[in-house]
Structure formats: structure tokens, C-alpha cells
Length: 420
Image (cartoon, rainbow, N blue to C red):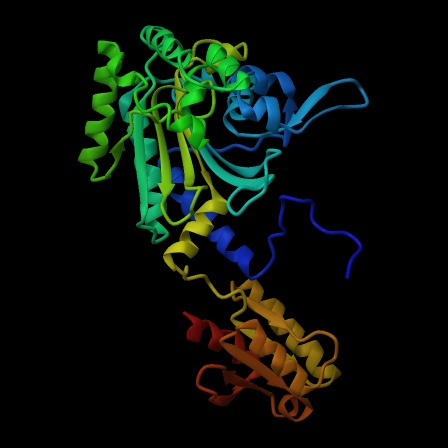
């Protein structure tokens, strides 16, 4: 045993489970790449103020969950707790919005960090795939992103997830609702921290998961009753476009996302098989975030889907992904001459796109064949001195058990033909 273990709230991603995570990332990214989204990668840490301004000073992420530290040079940095602020910062810094092709459509995949109480589906280090469309205010863009996320999940074989949809209004109508909600919250039996939060950002109280708080919110005013005509029309068009695409959703007038930057469209993907950590992803429109972090007005929309929770959702539904074999051919040499010849053939196979592995360490036939079985290879090639003297290798089909002699110079072509 090693002296060291993975830090609390984290886990190691190792084979064979890691293949499922890679497949999930690929499935989420595939519809994005097919829809004009380019890949972006940002640093794992940023200036603390980027998140304080963008995510919100009053959010739990900033006040309680962010890993913040000071460098030797005196810079205040934080491990990124979410992706949107970093991606927007990078796009502004690179002047992507000035290239004349708006919206700027970007997707990303990476690790994020929050100091939370660990439990199944909630980790201190977690993985997400996200997408952002920067610089355009268009209901079709909001609908596109929701449809692409739905497409990604369905391509994985998931079916027991729901899409919750709401509108948070804009700078014209939300202040009126904010005042009405604050008046309501002041009359409730809430602790001092929650009352303080209600004064700073009352919508965050609606997102409080504690039962003692939720049971008092039954008669809370709903934002949909305060939407201005422009926000109502915008939201209705989003709903119509999603419906026309055949994507089912549920209107949730109490849905608010946990970050301060959201405006208008907001949505969440939830899976009922995951218990308390039911959200597998979500996002929305954030028209004012660019200005919050010092950029020009750039209306934008995006989402992030949790890779960890998507894998848990697959497990909850009993979905097993069809993953490509990591090894198609396993070579077993018997003797030094065979090692030289078969290693060259394995190298040739790999160059030709065949997934091939080799019995290393000078194992005998019995031990090498055990390794071949464990590898999951469809075929094994075995060669000893007598085989090479005859100019052949023995090709064994690991499914049928059939074994045939194939010429050394023909083995690569033969395997290409068999594997298609």
C-alpha cells in the first residue's frame, strides 16, 4: 500500500472505468463540434476577482466553496469552480468578439474544484463539458443549446432525464420582482445568514435546498408573473422552438440557477435516479456577465454538463455503452527471434490502425495467454522457433478458439481483413 491516498472528496479515474468517462465526454462534445462550436481550454486557476464579480459575491461558490490562495508574488488566485467566467474572459482577452462572426461558439472540457461536503455525485474535484455562445441575443441560440444537450444525452442511451425551463427576466423587469420577493422573505422565519442573502440576492434563497426553508416558500411570488412583455415573448419563442424540435421539457417557475450572472432563459437537466444530487447539468443566458468582468455588452448563453453525474445516470438506468476494444490483437512471442519478429509486426499493425499489444517480460506461453485473455483481444498471434522456420505465425480467434497458420508477411493484411 502507498503511504498516500487521493484527497478527500476526490477520486482516481482508472481503467476500465475511465473508458466510460472518455466516451461520455466524446458523446457530449460530438453534437457541439457538428454545430460550429470550436474547442477552448483555459487555465485551471484564475484571478479570484473574476469569479467574485461574475459568479457573485453572495453565492455559496464564492463565499464557502472556492479554493483561493495567494501566490509567492502576491497574486490572489482561485482554482476554477465553474467554466463560463473563464471562457468569457479568454474570449475577451483574445478579442474573439471583434472578428466579426458573432456569436462566438466555444466548447470546453475540464476539471473544476469546489470545497463541498463530499457525497455520491458531489465531489471537490469534478469534470464537466460545457458550451458557450457569446455575443448574440437570439431565442434560437438558447433553443439550439438545449436541443444539443438533449441530443447528447439521448445518443448515450439516457431516457429518464427531465429538462426544467424558466425565465429569470432581465434588468427591466427583474428589479420589480426582486423587491416583491424581498418583501415576502422578510416575513418568514429565516436564520440571519439567509436573511442577509435575501437582501443581497433574494433569488438565491429560492435555490436553498434546506427543507426548513423550502416549506416556507410555497406562497412566494413567481418571477413569471412579473416578466415584461419582451421577456415573455422571448421565453415563448424559446419554448416553441424546443417543442418544434421534439424536445420535451417542464416549465418550472421556481427554477433559479445558483450563479448571479443568469438572465432570461435558465434550464436544468435532472435525473430522478440520482437521489439528492439529481442535477446532471444546466445553464442559461447571461447577457450582463461580459460587462461585469470589464468587457463590452455581449449577450450570451451556455451550459455545462457534469461528466461524473452523467456516468452515474447511465449506471442508474443500467445503460452499458458499447466501447471499442482497447486491444484487438495480442502478440505472444516464444523465444528471442520471435520477440524481434512479432514486435516489428505489432508496430506495423499499430501504424495501420490496428489496436495491438505485446507480451512483455519474457513470460511463458501459459502466463502470456492469460494476459491475452485479460486484454480482451479478439485475436492472438503466437510464434516460436519452429513457426518462424516455416515462415508462419499461429493466429488464434479468441472467441471461437480456432487456430490457423498464417504467413509472417501476410499476418497484418489478414488481420486487417478480419477486423474490417
